[in-house]
Image (cartoon, rainbow, N blue to C red):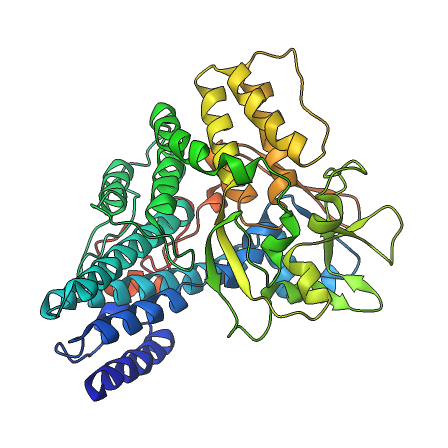
Length: 463
């Protein structure tokens, strides 16, 4: 126990130094013999999952997409306004925070995975628990790398992008000079991590084999392998369709209640302040940004009063609901849902469209529209672009305020028009370099082999 406590204290201490001194997370000093029991392994696993905080930057992706539009108050909150406007300096700050956070989690996973062979199980129950620890840590590591691929690498299909994949750190040992993988190599190593031999696990506080398979399908879609995405997602649809296409309340997803619609949710009971509270300017005057007017729901749609809220300050406009509703009511964010079953529907539908299967895509989407009491979709269009725009529009309605829209636009090489409060527009082209965040200066400083992303000169000579 004392060895484990020393290990955790050292990790915490060095992580603190790392954040202030720009040291890499692998440069942590630890007792190599600290993880010697199933209990200590489970605790370090819990620590690794606690360090994974996608909710802390969720608003970054929401504000950078077109889910929200500004009110007159946005100009009074410089950081939010700069994020909304895709300000270069603000994005550089985001890149530092996100990079450090994800590689911190990876470092903890690596430390745990390297030490697990030193733990000797005393019985079959402990053997299973150790298998679960290894499985869950490997999946978390893979998810972090997939996040890094989407955030710090350009989308597939763009020219001259091969040297710009992830920086793969597969060991707790610090390697100061290391080059990035290519995009295809990145997909391969993430796929390998997600494809390990697994045992049954249905604990939705951790990444289960089903969530790993969903992530594999998302990875295939990201890489343009649509047939593989379909092959991976279809069994998941079959498994979850009973609850997915039932009258199960969507409101429970954003509450303290259990919900079968959640596939993977982080326990956020120790998060004292919801990140979505940052949207609030003043309880009497309103929010810095509200739901985009282009996103609307029929009166019968069960999502209308859950996903959005009537804006008491401005007629015919809506505040963001979901986690923002919890923050508005001063309720603690008990869970942050990382993956939910509705993602399977839209993933499959997108892959069907790109494979030329319009009929199956519409059938699938309309099953979900029927459950939501929304207007079903019909179109005579047969071209991929029109169908894809229809799908992305419906997906935006389903996932408003969740950090999916930005990555949907990036993956599909879409341009983006953002409205300012004054009525002017900010036009972001599909090839704008800011879709991809820069490699932070802290990494460039000690790793001279890493290539900077196109359009950015952070950490380059003379900067």
